[in-house]
Image (cartoon, rainbow, N blue to C red; front, side, top):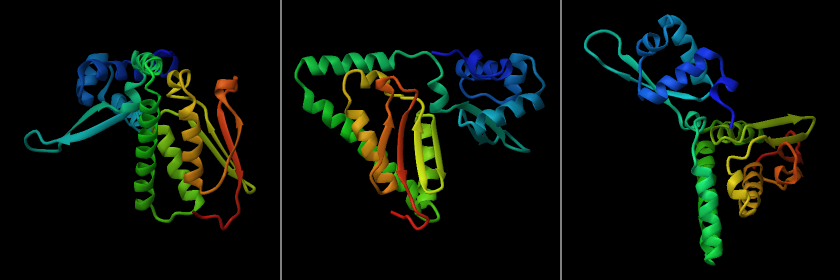
Length: 218
């Protein structure tokens, strides 16, 4: 797993680490902790928030403007070491050895059903349901979940690349998540996809392609 220093500037890595250690903090708290000017800290906070790594809330503290408190998002929490993935793999292996294959199947199908319902909820809130809208929502959705997507839509061809698999440990035990992910993407775009690259086979991404037309909608 890459360290914060590999992924961010020294100041941004210090900010993320400080928030992890302290919980909710203000820009002033961070400036004092890491020895930077408050204005510089705020600039870094804005950049990290734009990347979906921070959340914040306003809190009234007497008169004047409310104080902004920053905390790590779920996406940022995944940057820190965790044994969750390894534990999931061991759990799946255990359930499989004990013969609970139906429970494993039901677990993943329930998880993907929740993802489908959440995507539909976001689509219902969007202005329009055409393919471009769907792809935009899909990109945001997959980014939040750690798939590191790249989506290209040019000359009637759509390519969806998932450059990271947040369920790689689970995929070592069962390929059901892979099948469900393909079904999920087909439901999102409203037509069949061709998977042209597959990470378990040694490719750098799981890549799906299909042809579209200007009047495509689902």
